[in-house]
Length: 264
Image (tube, rainbow, N blue to C red; front, side, top):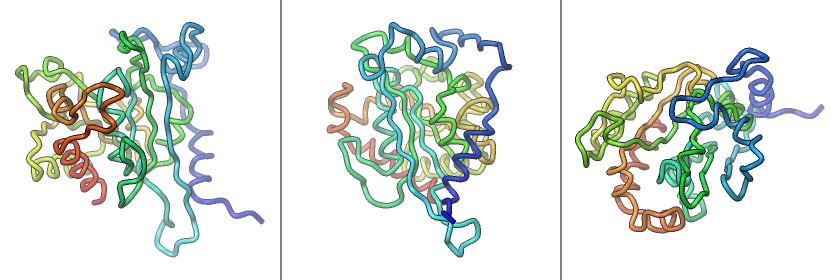
């Protein structure tokens, strides 16, 4: 008899049991600033072509279930960038690095995590491709998160949206995973990265149960909202083509702190 890996079983179960975001026959309303009410609606738009207007990248790692350790041995963390590429610049590169891969290619050493990202490829107007986190219904993204014990999502925000003074470089830490939030806030404080508990910022707190980052095995994840000034200082050439090969020390300081929290 062929022995299925625990990860394969989780993926199959997760894909089969992920609840729909809306009732059958209904369509979710687009978020206030969104053109599309879901990824499915975006993918169905004949005016949008994958590989031309947008891209999806992901990696799910092989796993074994023959470990004698409790629960077996399998990747248990998913890293997401729902608005990568030109939508929220810098989040694609951060997603890869937090997952254990250099944005320019190759693993960086240490643990690797599953990841999924959606990227805007337009020369302008990438904001039209933004789908709010609670409406993300990409089947690969949902299955990846549903089979993970933990998840962390990378986002970009303006200082205005965060309620911060212009020029403030900071990360807002939200989501429903209280333990992971606490570990991230501590790791950023130790690394000297200004970090704020997003619980006091309703628009960015990431605590909606329907938010894909909270659709893990434990129904909880962590959402990271990096202000534009913080992301800007991470790259020498802040363009979609240039960021991958021009990461600066602040980028790696943030990545290392995030990975340390995930290792706990």
